[in-house]
Image (cartoon, rainbow, N blue to C red; front, side, top):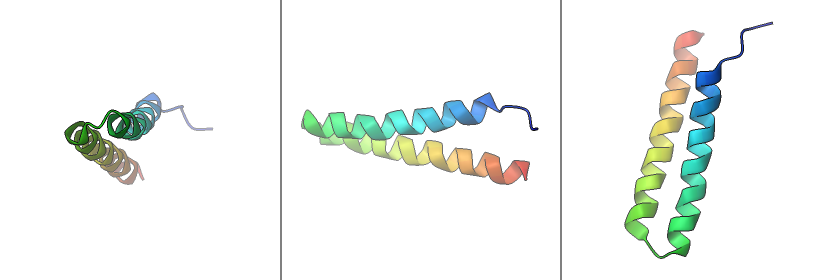
Length: 56
């Protein structure tokens, strides 16, 4: 069995928190903050995918 990879779990959790924060920002009518969290979420996911591809 492979070693548990904490860095990928932390990255996935951070991406989920970013996308949840988009909903909260829209609820507070802060569109600029929602856009920031959306871009940060996509950047975090992209970094995680690039790490996954690099480890293959």
